[in-house]
Image (tube, rainbow, N blue to C red; front, side):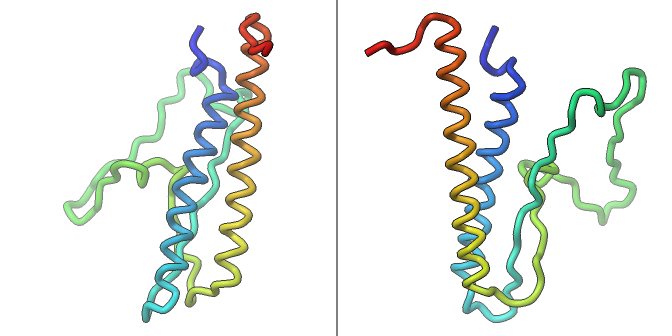
Length: 132
């Protein structure tokens, strides 16, 4: 069984990827603080649905369709709802953006520590822990 088969590792990796992408968006906000008419952006946090709340079997998934040539098709991170960015409106408030950066950094550190501890727990269970 591969580690990717454990849902906890997949969720933690998704959260770390999201935090990295958000850090990039927040850095752009800070870098463009003096740019006229620049609108700061932020990202919507990923939501993890418990298995009990998933779509029941037999229900077809919802698929977006381009019904007009003017519609833009999604690609890359933008098509993943976990990486959707939203405009926060107004101009850049450096204090507020730096608070978001600090909070995002702490979240990433907490998730990466949890990932490392979970990985060490699996290694211990398999008898492959580093005993030195």
